[in-house]
Length: 623
Image (cartoon, rainbow, N blue to C red; front, side):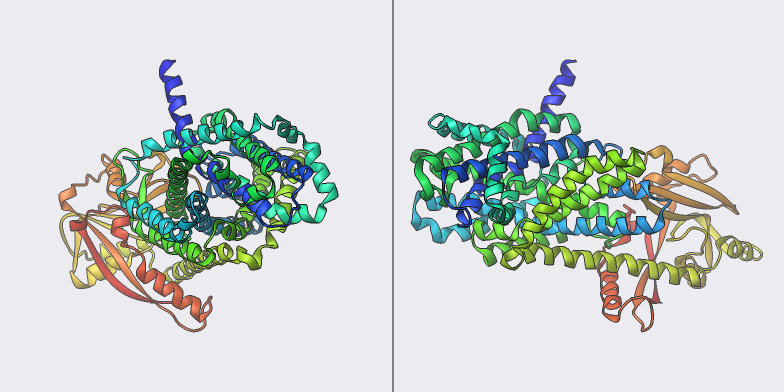
């Protein structure tokens, strides 16, 4: 019992650090973005109205939608858009046309995650460092270089993994929440009447009297739920209970106190406080330590998002929407801790571009919102199909459960469209480019597989023909990797043609990824004897499993084929794609696919094959 309690406490502390880092640092810029735009006249009723909108946005979107409803939609304990997409696609697998559309929508939402992943670290770290301007205007010129320096150190450290510093994430963020709560309380005690804004009637009155202004400022209000999607994405790491406990016991109260403290400051000091209400809450002696703590908190928040980008990329590769990338494991104990250099430095370059292009957290606030509100809309849409077709709930209940959230999400999305020209195009452009790459890769792989199938020779017929007059058989085992079971691998044809030998044992192995997070060891291997010491083997993996072919093949011991690692060779086909006119894609997409195929990381590394036992035989394929 004691161990269970301590484990729950540790998971809750971890959730505070990893899950709520983004939303916890939104206090740095959310209120400033609303009142700093000039759209809201500075009056006491408006302060009450805006704060009430903030509180009820947190309550409806985070507390009710994500913490209560969406966290229930776990896929074998896993969360996130990919897991939700897998649930939805499985729920409608008997409706192929609908399933195709849902897959497209889900993958587009995943692409938008990268756009959000660029804006969030940029706006978080920049808004923290901007506190130096409150200390002295002379620091203004140092804000951009310092921000870029902090971000460079963060990204440069990624290859070493977070095992060493990860234990500090929770405590640092917990201290941050205590500090922001204390700052809020210190101002609320002077103007306790500000707590009246907890009543929704202030929000409703503001909306009624200022409908146009309300619609415009929703694009800034959405900043208060920065990182809400992380709640669901990190479900697999922490579980529902710690995430819920952390939200209701620490995060929500701290955020509410700080926002209302900023409101009390605005009532006290008027419009002049709107330029940076968060830092102006602090006494002068505490400003520098607060800037340091805020920077540390934003680094933790950014770290969680970077780790999420690595994890999502790996899952998308497994599902077949991106080429293989070099994935390095940075922890022996935690297989989820990975590093993908291409993603790491690609994100860094895009974030630097965002910081240099927009130059202030206020300007970046204009870029934030479109991508994340589209993701929220997509999550709500997929949730409907999960609870309707997966859980078989009545249609009326499903519409009632998701329809309200769809209206809320769509309203925020429509408001953020107003920011398209100001900067909203930036994350959309990033997401659009990623989506184009993903769909090109998926389509190209389908065309390539169709081409291989059309040219393929049936494996059983070929073996029968070979063993009529068998070639010389040599000691050891040959493992031929093939994309399609039941067909002769090109590597085998080349081996027979050039070496004119066949191994004593031959395994024809196909690796298949499925739309579920995990597939257990007991369901990993499917074996079919083909005679003459040959076997067809299919290995099954979920999108969160790490493909490890040698380890999986150890399971077929006792089925007539005992693999000796020292006498096993792995044969792979290294195909070179040649674009041709008249196939299923535009010429530029064919060339792009060919380039992506060429730059894909080594299949041997991806499948954890021993380097000194791999034989690659090349061939050219026209598509």
